[in-house]
Image (cartoon, rainbow, N blue to C red; front, side, top):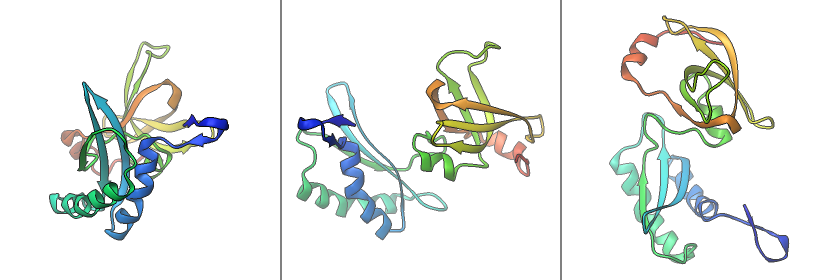
Length: 181
C-alpha cells in the first residue's frame, strides 16, 4: 500500500475494486479469487478473477460483468482508461493471497524459486500441506513416484517467483488417491 498525504494508508486500485466486487460475487455465489490492475504495453487492464465449486462458466462471467460494469461506472475508482476483463483464474492459478494457500492445502503445487536452492534446484512439484501467514512460509511434501508425500520441505514466499496449482492432467491421473499429510 502506498501512503497518501499525512502518512495515511491509501488503498491500491485493485483493493478498491475488490471491495466493490466482493458483495456482487457473494450475491452470485462466486468466490472472488483475485483482482489485478496491470499495465501491458500502453494499455491498462482491470482483471477480476472469479471461481466457484465446479468451475466458472461464460454465463457466470456474464452475470458478474453486466452489473459490475454499472458498479464501476457509478463508483468510478479508476481515473485512466482501461480494459475490463472477467474470467476464471484457470487450472494453473497463481496462489498470491493467504486465502489462496488456505483453500489449496492438500493440492499439488508448482513452486518456482527466484534463485536455485543449495542443490541447484529451482522448480518443485510438491503437495501443499500448510501455510504460515505470519512467517510467509508454505509447508510442502515432496512426492514419490506414486504421488505420495515423502519428505517435508518449507519455502519462504520471499524466495518464490511464484506458486501455482499444478495442472498437468497426466499427473492428476497418476496422483488419483495420492496421500500426503
